[in-house]
Image (tube, rainbow, N blue to C red; front, top):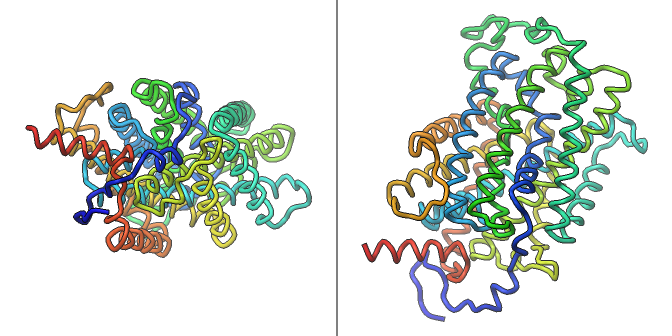
Length: 474
C-alpha cells in the first residue's frame, strides 16, 4: 500500500469492497420519502415535547416552538439544496465532508450518530409508558418493552429497505389518524385558562401567567420544541435508495416539514388546553391523560403506540444509514458497512440498537431527549455552516434545487442552532457534557487512527475528490 498524507483517502480499494457495501436503489419516490420524514418525528407529537412546559410554561414553549419551527423550515430548505446536489446515504455528513473537509465531515456524522442512537432509546421509554398505562400483558417494568421493540423492529429492517419503508408509511398514516381523533375529542374539554395554570416563579425575570418561568424559560424550552421536528433532516439519508433523488428528496423533506408544523401546532395548544399545563408538564403519555378516561382516550392510547413506533422504527433506519456511510468511507470500522443478501447493513442496524437498549434501561425519557437534541443541534450548526461554505466557495456547483433566500436562510438556521446547543446545557448540564465527552472520544479516534485510512472509492470521498480537482482547474 502506498504512503499517504494524514486525512487523504486510502487508495487501492477495489469494486469487491464496494460491492459488499451497496444499498438497493430506486426504492422510494417522494411520497414514501415524505412519509419517512413524518415517521421520523411523529412520536414527538405524542410524548416528550410536554416536558418543555416545566421549563417555560405554555408561553415559553409556544414562543420556542415558533422559533424552532422557523429554524427547521430554513434548515429543510437548505438541506433540500444540498441533498439534490450531493445525493448519497451520508446525508449531512456528506455535505459537511465536501464543505469542511474530513474533520468537519466526521464531526457532523458523529453528531448525527449521537442524535439517532439516543433518540430511539428516549422513544422506547415513552412506548413503555403507553404500554404500562394500557396494562398490556401485565407489564409494569418497561425493560421488557424496550427489548421487544428493539428486537422486533431491527429484525424488520434486516428484511430489506423496501419492506421497511412501506411498513413505516402505514404506521405513520395510522399515527396521523390518531392525532385527528385526539383533536376532535379534546375540543370539548379545551379551556384557555388551562394553558396558563402553572404558578409563575416570582424570582424569574419577566415572569407572568403566560411566561411563568420568565424570559429564560423560552431558551430552556428550545430543546423540547426541537422534539416536534427532530430527525426530519434524516430524509436525505435515503438518497441512494430513492428514485430520482435530485427531484424526490427535496420534495419529500419539504412535504414532511409542512405536515409536522400542522401536527405540532395542534398538540401544543390542545393538550395543555384540555388537560392543563401543570399536569401535562410531567406526563409520559400527555395526549391520553389530557382526554381523561373513556373510549377516545383508550383509542388514542393504542394509536399513540403506533405514533411512537413509527418514529422508533424510522430512526432505526436513519442511524443504520448514517453509520453505514461513515463506515464505508473508513471513518469508522469498515465491518459495520457490509450489507447482507438483501442489501441491508446488518451490523449498522444491530450495534446502535444494543447501545440504545442499554441506554433506555438506565436513562429516563427527559434526559435521553436532551442528549439526542444535543447531537441534533450540533449537527445542524455544522450542516448550515456547510451550506454557507458551499455557496461561497463553489457557486458554480450544479444545484437542481436552490434554497429560497440562500445564505440568509442558512445563516438564520445556524444562529438558532447554536442557541439550541447552549440550551441543552441549561436543561441538563450533566447529560449535555456527557454527550460532549462522547463526541470528543469519537474525534480522538479519528485523529489518531481512521483519518489515515479513509476509502478513496466511497461516494462521499469521490464527491470531495471531484471538488478538489475542480478547484485545481480554476
